[in-house]
View: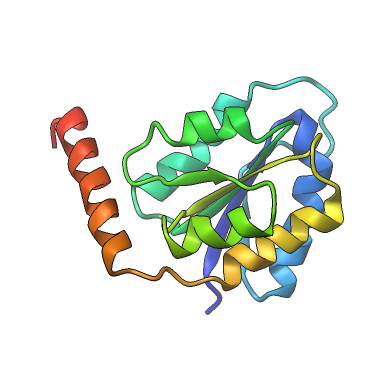
Length: 154
């Protein structure tokens, strides 16, 4: 059974979302589309879509996700409010690799207005293929989890 990966966008990212989803399927992932629909022409609020995907990451329903808005910034800010979500804005090959290798980012955020589609799929490919290095980086993630627990009273 293929691993599941969620994907969501706002109105600005819907075309890139479709392209990235098709690319991820080619890498043998099962894609769960959280919206926005390609058929919709109305403006939507990115926090609504980021929250749906981030909830499923936070609760363990899915392990990884891709969020796309105009810059990736709004999606990242929203997703990182959820415990256990480590959403990283990726702007180049280095950040795509390092957000996984050092931060074990489980959500990648892309900006449809700042990346061309070919580069975006390159970054997703790097992110999917990079493994978390663990060791000293795991210690740092444990500290982040401790902060989340304190702030969320868990």
